[in-house]
Length: 182
Image (tube, rainbow, N blue to C red; front, side, top):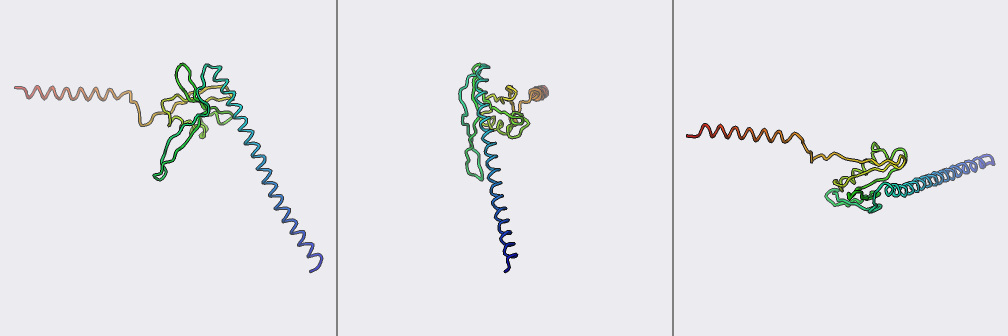
């Protein structure tokens, strides 16, 4: 082997080693900055929750619980699975308990955000009779969230059907009585 081919192999090996080290460094940097971003978001979220507690108290709410644990059980292939969720606050105002979820940022406080909506829907599923609120800390706005009660539909015109049924049975009974009396 001559010196030229030997140095070509050495350069090729160094290039591969440099590529591996460069890729490793790039992954470490991405991981580092991603971790910093997550930490920053978490810290901002915690800060906004502290601000939310102050906002709630200023607006007449009594904080009953913070980061409470609610749970329900569902089945996966016949096996019970317990699911735990944590609304940010259980509060009370005018003697009525309510659940409050705090969101900040540009997307999270919007009910159109599917993750936020699904989170609130789980709370509603567990405690359907407890009023549910979304506190948008970007705009200091408390929004009441109400989901439709499918399956427990209250039909305001049902009474008309039952009144008509009662009248029909009454008229039928009257004519039956009228024609069969002797």
